[in-house]
Image 1 (spheres, one colour):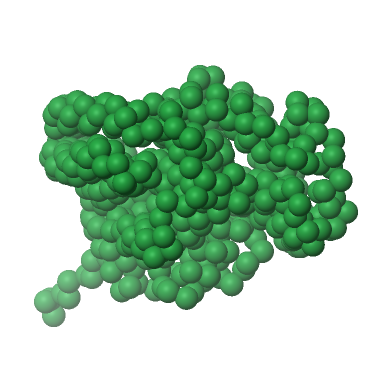
Image 2: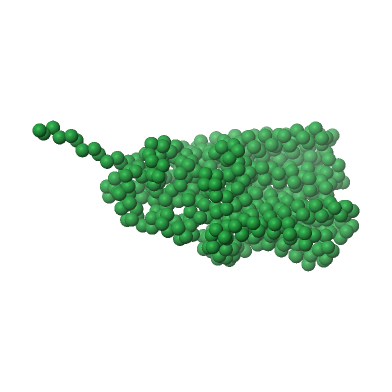
Length: 569
């Protein structure tokens, strides 16, 4: 170990170049992949419908009321579509911006609350962790939620610095309250409940009662409700059923009951964190111990304790839930990055070299393991796709291996210090995730259904605007966006069950009823899973195939045959 450096190990020009390089790697690939189900297609389609209908109050998905989540990201995506047009990079832009801003926020906070070197290290760690990097490039709600929650945490840390003028304390705390409000508008009550619970736990554990005098509770709550209240009031006025479904069903029953069918063992998120922070796993335990030993600030506030409680409580909160998804614990990533960054700067070059050599060996083993990727495949996802993706994975590992060797070499150069080697090592994992993630388009194009959608869109262009487009027995999350047309659900409402319950006239509850309607329709299209299509074809239902892949078929209603003119006198 060496004395922990506190000064920024890069000059301003080098730092700006580093940020620019990260921005290029972060934003350029956004449009290189098609949207994949389910989240990416769902939230892109909701934004498209909001833009087309002009209804910015009542969120709809596939034409049905959809109150599972608040509308902040839908608003942001709809504005992006309005400014830049429909497309993949436009659908991911808000998510990518919040992910990138999170990296800058963590760097700034680490530099101001701890020291400049720790801030830079924390930013590098967060940007290059697969968990944050990959989630920042998919159109899901959890990245934006995590950014607004991180802003609430970081604003609190920045507000509690000793010797800060009262006016700055107030502004930072207002930023904290405003970001909690935007977190609520991103995904619901957890944007307030989780930070609030962390604050209470911190107060009890650290016995820091004085912090409550610096929260600006009165003006902060006014600001919070001024931001959150308008939409909740307006949507309730237009939709009396909103309150019960959003608050009771989605915010409480979702957490307390297994009805969402997203189970997972209690250790589910431990695996997520271990894989998501894999590049920094070797210093993880030491980082936690280092954070525990950090002293309080002169005003009694303990920022490291706050980071530990934030990470631990949110992790345990979602581990206890009956509903689990990989992205749920993403809000703890910035706090973990700050703790890892504080410890990383205290390591000497020899210790880091041993870490990097271990990761180089790991990458060699991963390259060998990728051989088995080429043996996978089934009827839905042919083996040829896996073999094509295998090349992308090998390329990603190869680039990461070369950059890891560069990091090892930099640890041998005495003038270089620790951070250049850490930046090179972080770049290895950033490029690994970027290249392998981009290569997922091998699977993504098929799962997106874009090729079918283009054929369906061309067919719809020749038909009247009110031509019905049925989704038979399945909810396809991406085809409606690429077709630019909502679909009428048949038999299986899936996650649109609330919507079809509120507006039952907009769906077809049984296959038999749909067949009757299909036969009566003059013009119609339908998306049908392959197995169901084969059964319907065997029953001689009149259908004309427009497009198909290994998973689904899009059919049209055959045009009625014109009677042949009689030649009899």
